[in-house]
Length: 460
Image (cartoon, helix red, strand yellow):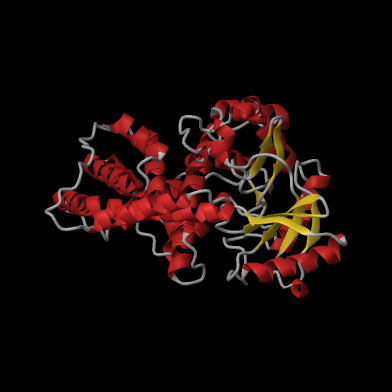
């Protein structure tokens, strides 16, 4: 529906649920790959509408909760002492707004880069290890009886097999991913204590104010499992937001987080089990990126953010290699030269055309805010990827094929070989090829990704 129709439907909904008033400050918030969020005021109160994006028939992901189950779980969590938002109304079929619910808007910051970079939140950031441990311990202590029936329980072995099936269903053929899947299968831990897990507890889903965590958002991935899964998820490299060396969410060391969790919950943490979940969660995010790219390709979610996130698979390649390296053994130094500027012969080349479009989009960015600014930045990001592919892609592709030929290995067979025997990573030629390939791909997709800088420092 168009903006005017949406506002009219939301006005009718608010009048029916909250009484007379006027709709004000209604804007879509940035982000929203899986869910759409709208901030609005009604009758002097601030609200958030969580809504399934238009065109989506259900929440994506294996085991993901419906909007109704999410609202029910949030209310249960709030009653259990978790800092969860208050759900004040739920959408129905007759509202014309699709699936969703309305929450009170909690004041604070959600953008990770803003939280980690604002001096006014410095004291709050220092308290985040304890705050995160406290909220996770409270979630993990929730009574499993009475939870929404959609919430599923999976053992570690079931989780990895479902993940591999999802990867295969989306045409995955990334050798590093297959090696990680092979390692996870071989080292899969036995089932342990099971608790309610948030499933997506990370920076970006936490509202932070000057005092610390104000509320915990985005409960659609909640499920029952090993408490270490939630702890390791917070330490996933992609959720460190430029601070790769601070494993816990980009704000602290893992030791600080685990010690705080022990104090709050009384649970000890197995390092081997934690490392398994850390690698699992990293691979899980990579498969999510594949899925989002596929959702654009098959037409189910034709939004710009989808294929861009689909290119984030190369970030996960670097992260998986860095996490697998201790299991593989010491690496020899790589010979890596930063790509030079492309040489042109007079006529305009595709890289220049893309660079010109990118410059124009930057100039048009202006004072855009909210989701409009987010969309514009996505377009600039996509044009940058395409520009670097046009300029650097051919040389990288030639180098990639030459390495495979020297190893007498097939590009099509290498993923299956690594899944069957992840110890092929101990072959220096294979290991060097995978590292160079990941660095080349990430130089095109996201050259400022923190993991790439770490890889260069360690390997070259």
